[in-house]
Image 1 (cartoon, rainbow, N blue to C red):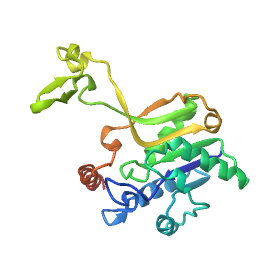
Image 2 (cartoon, helix red, strand yellow):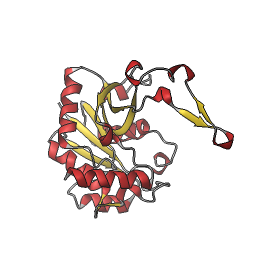
Image 3 (cartoon, helix red, strand yellow):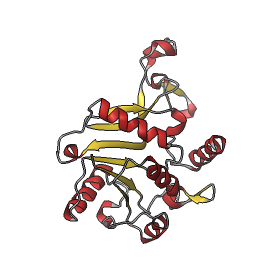
Length: 225
């Protein structure tokens, strides 16, 4: 079984400038994902998919060789990660490398631990799934959501569920955006990918998009170490 791990790390984040290499407790945040990935011993190749020579220089200090840079047309805000993964796989095939599984771990996932990826690899094999995403439970239930209208009026999105207790509402989950895996054959197809969900604790699945998210992740990490 040969596994490729892709850490997608373009330079052009907008809400947090240069987010993927911003210092998280005195270290570039991407370093945490790299260290975790290396300690699992799961991956035959770890590739940092970046369009930036700055990021390339930073990660190569962690003894991760960047075999090629991402093309500029795959580095914009609206480019999907599946397109990036397919580009990476194609480039490696041209270099003579083939992989059975394609994994990804985002560069802003400092709360993901070695044991999470190892458990996920066991889940992936045991369930014979072809695609997997790390998910966390919505809490409180998403069915209790409101939107804010004019004059700050709250309008329930699902009126019928407001009368239910939380334990009587079906659980729902969200894609944490932290990590996932695919059988390589899945990414060769153009059909819609069907995923299985590997459940992780909600605190590990913080999607770091704002400085509030960033500061919360730092506080959690400090308590963890």
